[in-house]
Every structure is written in structure tokens, then in C-alpha cells.
Amino acid sequence: MERSVALAYVVDLSGPSPWDELSILEDELEKYKVGMSRRVRIVIANKADLLADDGNAKEVEAAREKLRRLEEFVLQTLAVEGRTIDVIPVSAKFSQNLTRIVQLMRMYVEDAKSRRE
Image 1 (cartoon, helix red, strand yellow):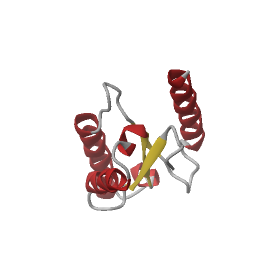
Image 2 (cartoon, rainbow, N blue to C red; image 1 turned 135 degrees about the vertical axis):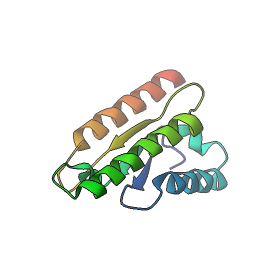
Image 3 (cartoon, rainbow, N blue to C red; image 1 turned 90 degrees about the vertical axis):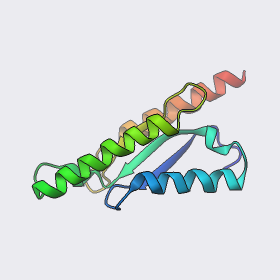
Image 4 (cartoon, rainbow, N blue to C red; image 1 turned 30 degrees about the horizontal axis):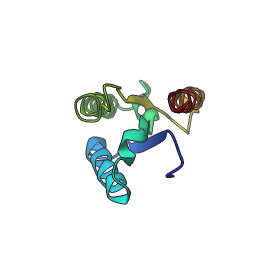
């Protein structure tokens, strides 16, 4: 992990407060090694299938509100050196946004490597 130039946080949208999970992850990463959280480039919001319109309307709205609050938390709390951290909802169940995650991580790694040269 220490050699990684780009890291991802993964939180669960089905939980009561994914922003609290994110805060705990950041704290744990900093306890592991001070400065590691500055390498985080993306927040993966798992269980995005909860956002689908075919579910219970109240549950869909609750999941959308959690995603909105998570995005707001990231924007207000986790900006690193003027760089915002992307929040991408994913669903492994429906393969939603998995290709996008891979493309973004490739871009982050290339960007980090170019900064070191």
C-alpha cells in the first residue's frame, strides 16, 4: 500500500451513514502512516443498485440522499491540495461503473507518475 500512488476508499450505501465509514477509513489510514490519505483519489460508493428506480420508492430516495450527503461530505472534508476526490456509485450486482473505475484509476496512476518525473 505504501508504494501505491493512488488509493480508493470503498463505502457501503446500504449502511446508515457512509460518510461516517469514510471518516473512519481516513483516520485509520492516517494512523497507519501519516500522509497516506493524501494519496486517495476516489471514493467508491458500493451497492449503487439501491439507487435504481425499480426498487421501493422510499428506499430509492433514501439511497439517493445518502449518495448526495456522501458527495457533499467528500467535497467539504476530503479535498487534497486543491484536488477534489471523485465519488463514483458502483454496483457489482449490475456491473455499474466498473469500467469507469478502472479508467479513472489508470488516469490517477498516470497523473501521479507524471508528477514524480
